[in-house]
Image 1 (cartoon, rainbow over the protein chains, first blue to last red):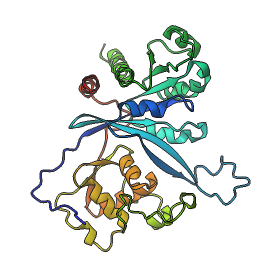
Image 2 (cartoon, chains in turn red, yellow):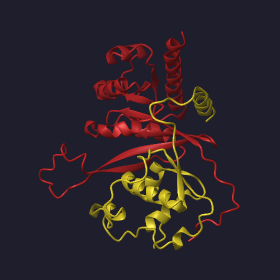
Image 3 (cartoon, one colour):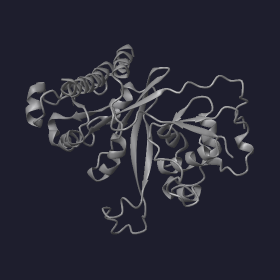
Image 4 (tube, rainbow over the protein chains, first blue to last red):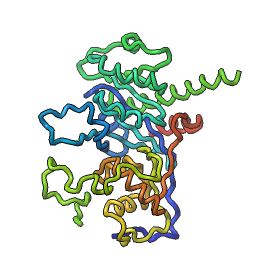
Length: 201
Length: 131
């Protein structure tokens, strides 16, 4: 077992870490999106639920099951040696939303992935980000064979606030996903700037 | 100890769940006494000059595994959990133990409820463009 023969070694760089959330309905391509830009294959981590899950989990018939686990996919993008962005796919099921609160704490922003064939699946995510004041952008994942709608039609259907960007994208395509992420960060910046303004005048 | 990379020999069925239950690894604790709740992207860094954590009999194998993983590159709590195939809650407790023993320290991410600096956001954008 080699556990470092340190003392002389230069201390490792401790990067600034940021996180962004990827939300949306089940099967909308969250994991694919994370995989397209992550430098590591999407990892999966589990949060053990016991206390928190108990009142909601219907365990009838499986009474022996006392814990529930919920998996989160995540990826990593090293932007610079000292700057790392983590992407977290939020758990799909609504009842795991208390986990979102932990994920959302300190998050830079979020992507809500939408599928125009099942737009209603992302209502909950939009609602969540709006209520928490987390900057987000809608990424409309253009599935092969699904009808294309202009971004404005999607904006109308989702009843979005002005300024929330809507981007058509392909979750499989790295460049396309990069564009979505950049849009989120730009939106976060603009919003921060707008919030600062009234305070200074 | 086996050497298949995961540190767990696969003689049992996955459906059985882990042979060592999570609460056993944390000796029944669900949170760490001294630490604030560690964020998923909090980075765990092994302290300099930590030699032979493996020789420390008071540490569980999972503790040692965490120190080893953090030795060369700082690792986020999420990565450690994924790497070691442990629930995040367990990793939080174990990292808390290690921090108490001064074997690792934890770097806090940007404080919650406050957006990172504009300059950092700009760096993120240019970093993403350059990917």
